[in-house]
Length: 442
Image 1 (cartoon, helix red, strand yellow):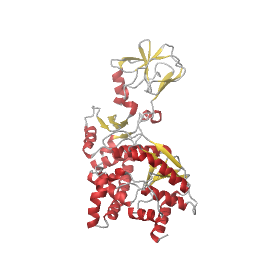
Image 2: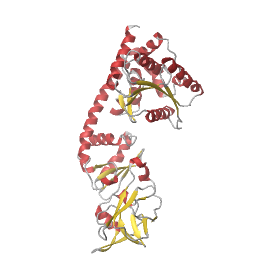
Image 3: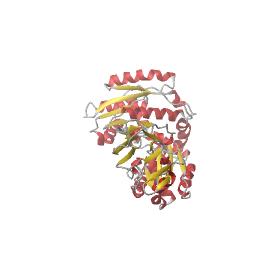
Image 4: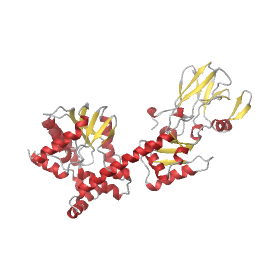
């Protein structure tokens, strides 16, 4: 074996050293050149090294007739190397970008497959990193996008690693030639209507003819930007620690931040902190769409502004900004009679109700606010529910979801609100546990 090949094998092992105690290494195996080299390298290392259990995952997208032969090719390669193979067939959602839809489907399959303490290894290399940087630069990406593909990131219950990011395409081709490896060629890789293919086949050859080290220097720039992103993330954590204060309505179980703490920051630090906070919750907005944050932040005190994003909405209420998604944004089905108030009541699409203490005599009914409701309070007479909710500071988006307990047309209690939840009229309390994320909110 020649010296460069030894270097590639040794570098791979060094890059994977921190994860030698993982339960399993799973290899994303398309059957193409790059993943074939990664699979072959690992299979041969496993003969002399004590490695985690190796297996391969092939995701079949079903986008091209020629691809129907690839699973069988992958089976043949894996059988020859003694590596177990799992084939996952996915449905690619139609959309403007077939590339993106296929990638989303592929990584969703990976996410569902990889378990705790397992690592998924993919074969992107330095040339891919340079292409990613230029592609995103042309789309106007910020620091996060220009930092390129991370060497590692969480993936479902496990971790995604790209251990070949410091290897070049030429190195992988040389390894494949030396070991006489067989791989499949995806015809779509030659289709220059796809932006990445256009860059690879028409732009980079021109760049590298003038600047031979273009790939290496661009990948290095991505590494610098990745370091800058790390510093921005640290700054975001500092700023968010000031805004993640406890609030009176934490029992809602919704992500929220204190607006006053954010308003003390510069506009750039606000965007940085919010981007960091929103990133696990939604696809981030582009630069032009950030005006929605300014509108929400600067609205008058009595307004209830909303910033609509790709996967949910940011609301402002009670001096805080709140993230809402899923069922919080859907119309509520009607509630109804509470036949057995001794037992908790699951309300359609709105969590669970229970009563502690002396159960009021029935028949009891659950309703939602429609407007004009009046509640009789000891020593205070009949009071408008709207005013009572204002006094309690209930966030505007909660008011239509607060369960109201009625008996024979009379409003007895408003769930979870001290003094209105039944406590002032008897030795009982109405408790509401809203739906949380685990129950399907996001």
